[in-house]
Length: 209
Image 1: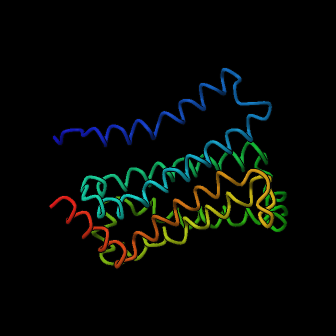
Image 2: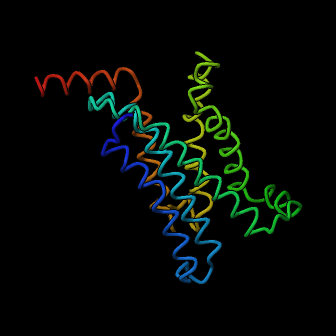
């Protein structure tokens, strides 16, 4: 039996504690005057956070030489999907009461709904094929499929930007948090560029050597 590492334990604790906190706050009536909106916002933030950390594992693992980070990508990505699914279920079930006619009508007028749904539908096959069985069955196509995270992450950031109250053209309103997340995701994508990644690995080797 493999020994549980500190990072592994931390990932799983971080995965479940936010959900437990939401449930506790719900029953304690601490979810603001609009609890449904609060659940949507908090689960959405958690989904983006875990997807961002999952995206960061490969470049940071390479640059820092921390191999265990590679092993935690799957768990972080699956927690991201879990919170995205709760986020969507809250939106469809609690916010709209499964009124799909209204949802379809609003999807055509509210771009953030369409973009968020597209991101979730793209994320779904990644979550389904995250197990070893599919890695072996799909072979090289597994990696190709999971590169969709490069498309999903910007879509989630755009969904976040459009869903908050603010003026993107004038950079006014509640835009600080989505812009900050966008910058971090952008940095993680830049660190995946071979020339930049190899340059940083070489720098680390020289400093440690």
